[in-house]
Length: 249
Image 1 (cartoon, rainbow, N blue to C red):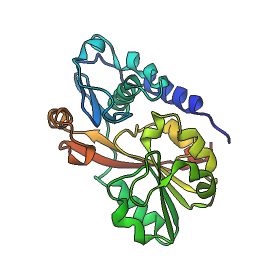
Image 2: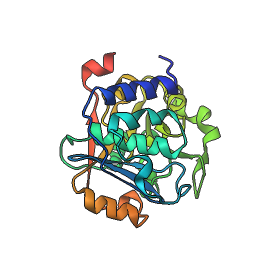
Image 3: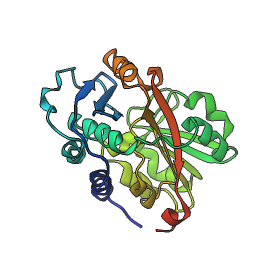
């Protein structure tokens, strides 16, 4: 099935609009992350591009609801898209599944001895790179042993597992990545921007590895200090996998 970025985004917005809604009471914008708070839920998201937006008061988003914010996701690569996805996460990531588990643990378990690609440079990649038959990190802004994203077409069709940063929901690239992966490839969408959205399973994802907020005050305080995700306190890392019925659609 060939999918488009617009298809993914509209399906995600539609799913969010069918779920929990509430007025936005607070927002926070740091150099790395953004957050949205309602009366009884909160969500976070990476800022894309990181560091591009100085902190400013939340006047622009006061009096809006989560559903009001959601369509901002269509404005790919903007602050509005990051805040929209944080709001979608506040709506969809309220019930955190299972015990806390990190994405790198799942990648090591499922990818050991296999061809693995990680799209996006995560801090853990240097620690796990020797656990696989072949291992590639593909990145818009390559560093150390990363490869540029232009090499994806030659690599992704032959990987057994692709771990994909959820910021691809913000920068317009997720659909292209999913289309390059084989049907048999295990596809993990991961990172703090990941929504717990069943539509992503229908688009081909096998696992969603994201974060729920258990103490928004600690999380927002860290974002205001411009901390990156791994430095934040008050989050719960979760992994959800597609049910058989979802995989078949």
